[in-house]
Image (cartoon, rainbow over all chains, first blue to last red):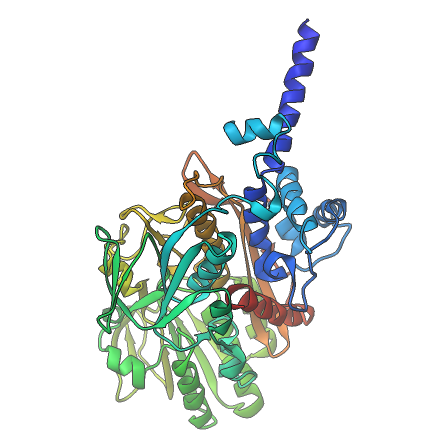
Length: 99
Length: 424
């Protein structure tokens, strides 16, 4: 019984966190911060990587590699460290859905 | 995170039924009229994003006194002769394509109770919500002897890009080789913390090539370089030895415009051939007129979740006029981030929804130290619910390890993209 309670709590936590990452308005707003450099909705007008349409897993991996230093960068390694995994997931969700 | 009905629907798998698809994110049914005062980085971005995120449901009127947007970032390259004013100018046609009504004029009064804005032309605009993004005004009395007229004609500030940028460039071109260019920096906080030091580099870059016997004197009212200190000091030592001289603690006590002499509280007077005095700064005048000032008689306090004024309901303040959060620079980039917080909140509120949870915002600022090398400072800021302000995220952000050519290319791409994001 006790065990069941823990499982339920963990599942609910997972759901709550998934719900946060699925909040489309917050995802859109979070991603808009990136648009100042990467173009509106991730459509770069040149010289910066376009983010629109980038597969979710690719963006999540890039953030991890920026943070670890595996992917060299001028500024993204410093910016990537300002976001939680959950926030990165929200941003990745938004850009993956852009054309 | 608190659960509300929407979260519950999502958790039970009814997200699609609740309309939470990307195509119809929050605020899709928003309507009403927003007036935006100021078409700089903040106002332009807010106007565009309110149109975009409300799917055209909210009418937006932008009031701007100038016929086109001229960028302060990159304007020091115009002083160096590396760029022209046309290179840093963007028209408002792109915003019109988003359905923004652009009115060229000057807002002179706001009536928060009646929700109206009065223009110098006499025209009156009604709003449901107002965005005030006026940038900075100068406190001319912070420099005894300086007048608005002198500051417009001879003792230039060139701290708002435009005709002043061109006029200061002309003064530098007309100066004889062996002359002295002096740049007086006001006490912080002022618009663009690294801007003066970049300007010193860019003028020195020009002198080094064309007038090598000339000098750049930096007369800083602050006790030290306010941003990217190590990187600027290195540039002055490496590239501009014998040209740039930095003098801290230079609080101006008097100006003689005829002899172009500055006097200081605790330092020797300085006579220059070109005198570039950046006066102390305060919120744009309309912020004062609208009763939005809450701090030090200078700055506008805001609710950082919505950018709504702490003094007046239904009025959102952006950018340099705000009382900055800790470690938050008064920069064009930061102002666009303010604009997106405000746009998200306004669109939700005008759809009858609650303001969204706070987003994370970032700042990236590039400074040219030579014609082809650049240094940056970057930061990430997240909302602290307990202290009700944005704070820099520990461990994030930082500086360039050294000036480099790659970031000179990136700086220009940054400009191109942020101008497009704000105005096109």
